[in-house]
Image (cartoon, rainbow, N blue to C red):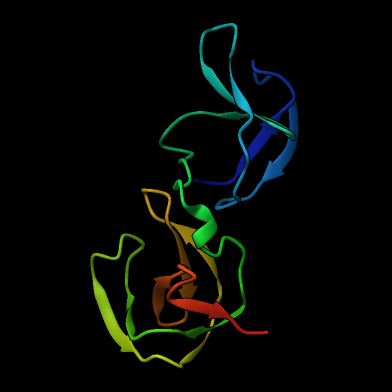
Amino acid sequence: MKDETFYNNADFTSKGAAVKKNTLVEVQGIEYSSNGYPRLVTRKGYLTARKDIVSAAISNIDNYYTENPVKIVMLVNDRYYTDLEFKTPGSPVKKGTTIRVQGIEYSKNGYPRLKTSQGYITSNKRYVQKVN
């Protein structure tokens, strides 16, 4: 997803608040513009339904951190990845390692990833735990 704008109507003639890239938004339904374009209905207004701009979250999203935990500890041995799709592995990271998190980004399939200075790592709560 890229930075977008909420609109006050399905025809997108009246802009509302801005919404930042990688913001998780709860969709309440779909409505159509007068020209037949689908719009996502949210509490804050309407968003485009274009698949190249927004993506659906995974069904088990509650098992993942979706807000920046700032600092995590590894619960298992894993590795960093250089890409959001986890296709290119980077250096290994050992169980018990504490890592600073810079932010959260989403894969094409809707998986939240933790962005670090060394690459991306899973945000799955079975593998990482937030440190206070």
